[in-house]
Each structure stands twice: as C-alpha cells, then as structure tokens.
Length: 275
Image (cartoon, rainbow, N blue to C red; front, side, top):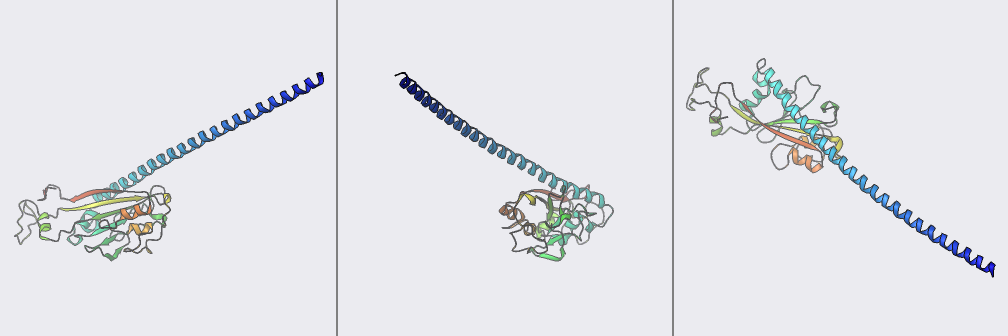
C-alpha cells in the first residue's frame, strides 16, 4: 500500500514539473517575440531617421553648391569686367544684341581657370537649336573634372535671355530722355542709348551617386531625344515641355534648381523699364 502511494506521488510531481516547464517555454517564446517586434520597430525607426537626416544633408549640400556657383560667376564677372572686352564676360556676352532669345549653359568645373569662357559654353538660339561652335558647356557625369564638392556634386549654370527683337524690346533698351526716332547715338549725356538687359540665371546641382539613373557621356547624349540619362537631362532646355528639371525628376535623381534674375545696368543709368 505504501509503495503504491509513493508511485502515485512521483507521477504527480513529474506531471507538475512538466506543466511548469511548458509554461516557462511559452513565456520565453512570448518574450522573444516581443523583443523581435520591439527590435524591428526600432530598426525601422532608425532607418526612417537616417533617411530624413540623409535627405536634409543632401538638400543642404545641393543648396550650397548652387549658391557657390552663382557667387563664383558673379565675382568673376565683377573682376574681369574692367579688364576685358564686354563679350568675354557673362553680362557683356548676354547683353549683346545677338543673344536675344538665346540660352547659354556652362558646367562648373573647379579645375578650370575661368568659370565663364566662350570656349566652354553650350548655346541655343531663339529657335532652340544648338550652335555647333558653342557646344562644350554641358556637364559630363562620366568625367571626374566636372564634379565639385569633393567629387560628389555636379553643378550646371544656364542663362536665358528673353527674345527682345520685337519693337517693344527696342524701347526697353533705352534710358530716360532717349527718343527712339534718334538716328545718331551720342557717346555721352542723358540721351545716350545704353543696353539695359535682363536675363535669367539657373543653377542646377545633382548628386548622381544617390540615383540608379545611368550617367552616360555628354558627347553621346542626343540633345532632342535622350531623357533616360543624367547627361541627356543636362542637355535639355530650360523652358518648354521637357526641361532639365522635369527630366531629372522623372529619373528620380536628387537635384535642386535655383533661379536668379540679372540686369546689365550701367552705374548711374536708369532704364525705362524701371529696373
């Protein structure tokens, strides 16, 4: 009788221990699942924070590149305006009557001695056609010499002058006191006709490394049809249906474009346009 009781006690103890082990295992599994869920949420949050931080850094880098490009070309123009021919500096070149309706583009190449040079620009006429003798200014993403900011950013400048070849444009290029019926152009005095010219400046900076878009080569990218590469986007016009910005946006390339207006207005002269 005693042996039977001891056997039954052993069975009860073994069953109880088995149930406790199963409960502990379930608790451990639940804790592990909870830890995995918390870890996944933390990783996801960290990834989101990293993307936000990276996007902020990219935007700041692009902004600084655009700002530096404008400052550089303006400083160069001020320094060289008094020592060179008008056609050899940016404002003088864009103010030439032949530039009406034209678009001039140039790549910010840090290793070049000058930012603006008529030998290193690409120019479109009023019909949007690329001039064959002015086709050396578009940025080439496959060329390391076309990168700024420690080789990460490409910046291209474009300057667009409205077509003022009509009758209205002629009046905008006169100062107060000038009469459009004058046949002679006085060299001095209030009636002297001065070219007060407006044109728009665009700076577009791109970070190709943050995109899967193909770079291609600027020489291979066809101006009219290639919108599948970064090089092809740089060769698109600034106005119209397909532009530099719409092309880069369609490719998912991180970029920023800044726009500024310029006026070539001699000191002490007030243009009729009130600029």
